[in-house]
Amino acid sequence: MAMLNPQAEELNRIIKTHSPTVYELLSKKGKAIYYPKKGILAQGQAAKDKEINATIGTACEDDGKPMILPSVARHIDLNTKDVFPYAPSEGLKPLRDKWKELMMWKNPSLATKEFSLPVVTCGVTHALSMVGYLFIEETDEIIMADLYWENYDLVFTCGYGAELKFFNFFKNRKFDIDSFRETISAKPIGKKIVLLNFPNNPSGYTPTKDAAKEIISVLTEAAKAGNKLAVILDDSYFGLDFEDGIFAESFFSQLAHAHENLLAIKMDGITKEEYAWGFRVGFVTYGIKNGGSELYKALEDKTAGAVRGNISNAPNISQSLLLSAMQSETHAAEKELNKEKLKERYVKVRETLNAHTEYEKYFEALPFNSGYFMCVSLKNVNTDKVWELLLKKYSTGVICYSEKNLLRIAFSSTPLHKIEDLFNNIYSACKDCAS
Ligand SMILES: Cc1ncc(COP(=O)(O)O)c(C=O)c1O
Image (cartoon, rainbow, N blue to C red; front, top):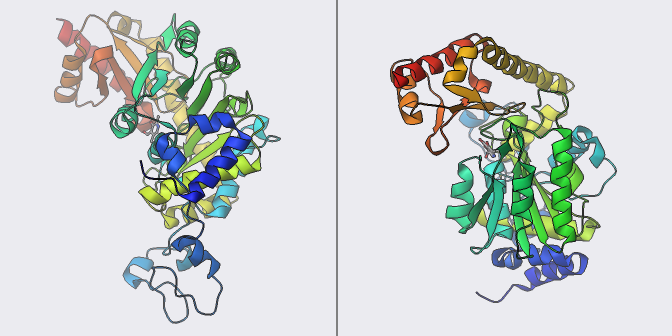
């Protein structure tokens, strides 16, 4: 590998001084990356208010406004300066501040704690990829539940060569804490990367408060035993909790200050939380016990450097739109309304399952209490055949996990009045396949 740039060395020195653990967790790419302090973007920033600014590679009118095409601009109800120019690689500062403020509001236990400013990415997938870039080597394993979002294969295995190592998710309809403990505490002691995704895709499960306590304790014990842990928290479906008694805060709120050997990395975004799937804005936020502002700034710089080297920056228009929306007085109530609609569908799924005991011959639900999805585990029938029949005979599409004999059902996208039909169709398809 080429010699490290002195700016990368400087960031590494800061990181090592404030947290040898974080330094050890960095991948080779993570150690090499930096945000160019004197690069084109920084020099452009320095010249921003000058009389003559001939720095940055965008086109401007003679009065300094962005040179735009009216046929594009006429569809947009924002100031052109908040839309057309590049956004900074780390994201718009007011949006980052607002997201952090909201994070503390949504997670009251974070309110008094120090953690980094969120760095903006191009959606959560990109946030995951950037964390792969910074922390994952080809020799690393990533510990996660055996029910997981399939794109982790592409991001972590295909993208960074890591191996996914699974713990068993459920035992007796509860989080399998024994399997989790066994996997986390497996020897040798050393670097461990863990990924938790709650509410989970595909199961729609979030741990109860008691299970959450145990999960946090297992991770803290592993850190105390000398492991260096990077715990990636994929909070894509944050906030969609539909039952009392589940752990509704992000695990970040407890893990960001759990131990000096444990770096918590929160991934979240506007995709699901703000009902803006195609906008492509995500965030990466760091927390570690006794972290401190210098460490966090160095991590933010490295993350911004990784963003700069991969996509340069996330869309300005999406960031500006969301910032403006989140400052609106009606924003919180609008979100609550959508959540209520999703909860109604969730309740309908539960009612339907309770009302039809005959379903149990062919399928039963895995534990679910949150998010967009739930899964049914099929018995006595071939999952692929049921899936095919659902499409062909019953005009019904669900996601099939053949190896696990599961069907994933997105109640988030199913109209309320079709939920009962959906389950009846699954039952009929199973019956057809069994006969
Ligand atoms: C668990 C999980 N993580 C991440 C994502 C990706 O989010 P984004 O669309 O913001 O990249 C999804 C989207 O389906 C998801 O289910």
